[in-house]
Structure formats: C-alpha cells, structure tokens
Length: 260
Image 1: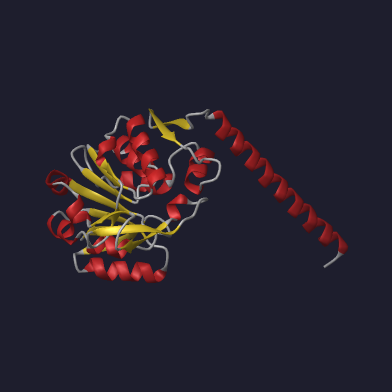
Image 2: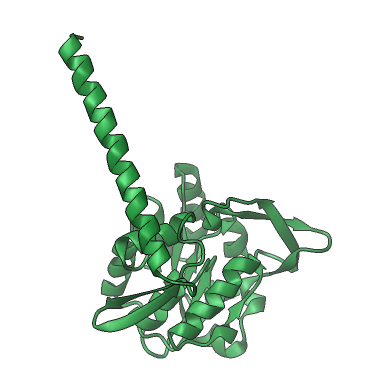
C-alpha cells in the first residue's frame, strides 16, 4: 500500500466519523424538539399518528422511529398490509409489543377493531398504554405479562438499556410479572376473532407457540414470528407444519406463517 493509499483511507475514516457525529447531533436535536412530552407526530396514509418516545435519545427502536419519521419496520408492515390478512372485525395479538409501534400500526394502519397487546417491561408498558391512548385505541386492551406455555411468574434475565426490545425474561417461583399462555390470556371474544398474532420475544417464541395450540387449531390465525437464526427458523417451521402452516419471509428475521 502506498503513502497515497494510506492518506486516502485516513481521509475516508475521518469523513465517516464526522458524518456519524453529524447524524447523531441531528438526531439529538430532533429528540429535544419533541419537547417535554416526547411525542412525535407523523402522517401515514393521510392520517396523523402520534408516538411517545421517552427514550428516543438512546433506545434502538425509538431512535429508528425518530430518524425515519415513521413506523419502525415500515417495509415489513407494508408487506403485511398488502396481504390483506385482517379486516375491520379482526383481533390482532401483539406479543412483545414494546412501546406499541406495531400495535398502533395494526389499529391505525390496518384498521382492525381490537389489538390485544402484551408487554412485560413496566416502563415500556406504560409508554405502550399512552401510545394506544394517543391514537384513539383502547389502552386497557394492553396487558403487562410474559406469554409462555404455562401460567406462572417471570423476571428480567437480560436487560438492554440501549435496545429495550432485546430484554429477555425467565420463569421464577415468585415475584416478577405475570406469565400466561396466550390461550388463557385471551377473552372468549378476543379468541374467536383473532386473525393475526405477531410474536417478537427474543428467543422465547417456541414457548409462546406451545401456549397457543388451541388458538391455532380452532382459529388458524396468521403468525408473524421474529426468528433470528437458521436453527430458530427450522424449529418453528417444523413445529408449525404440524398445524398446517407454511412460512413466507417478510425480512431476514421476520417470517409470516399462514395456513396452506
């Protein structure tokens, strides 16, 4: 490598660092401009959407919303909308709802009548309820609980302050938050109208799936499951095939399972 090459690489690295610093400065300015309520407003398909972003200066999901001025995972959400899997009378279950980005999209973007949102983290749960309220949705349809294959209690195993959605839970004998199967958590009215279940639970997806066998047998809802590895994809695909589901990729890590 010549001296010219060294100087060029050094210039590229310096420029990249400066661009990242500028991008971070702009993002923090946007966060400050949200004011004390930390609510960002944007327009989706002609309708105003409001999302409270209390940790928009550091949390990955909230920073992405702030940066893009729109829903998180917009590409996947648009693909889902185009499939017309739900209607006005549908119930959608959002398992691992975080601050409600997807829940609000299901209600405002897809126009479903009822979203049953499940989020165990207290801070995220409070923001979830507020985001549902801000968008004219029912905050009481949200539940602070871990979904698994059995009833019990669960507590935080791994906490990620810069990616709250990556926080993981584990079962415990006592304390923590409520743990339940989805079959047991839904009311009879919710159960009978569920057409879509979104599952983003940081590796606990098989526990969630094993706790909703009645729902899959009787209602056959479409399933959106986050699967991060080839092993996770294989395990979920093999299990769900027994119930008649086949997979379709929404992204590298998001997979839609529908009945043949």
